[in-house]
Figure 1 (tube, rainbow, N blue to C red):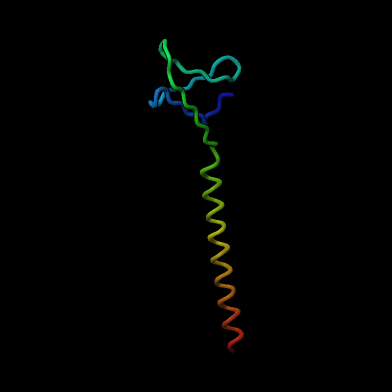
Figure 2: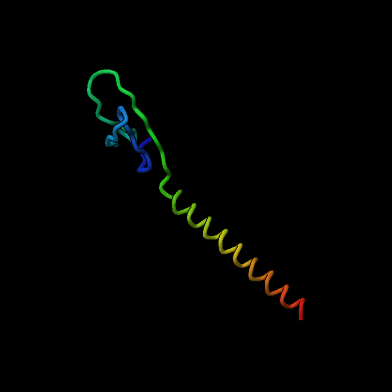
Length: 76
């Protein structure tokens, strides 16, 4: 099914994908034998991965600060 995350290459060169009929994908190719490559990259994946890694970084930072303050409290 057609979605904005799809990209296509025809013989190694990027080509435009269009929507056909009720949600199928189509690309224009000249007559003859060709190699077609399709790749899918979900739209929200980049934002999701960014949020995930920022969250992990914040958690590690919070844990580091908490451990450091608890060690300081134990010394006094």
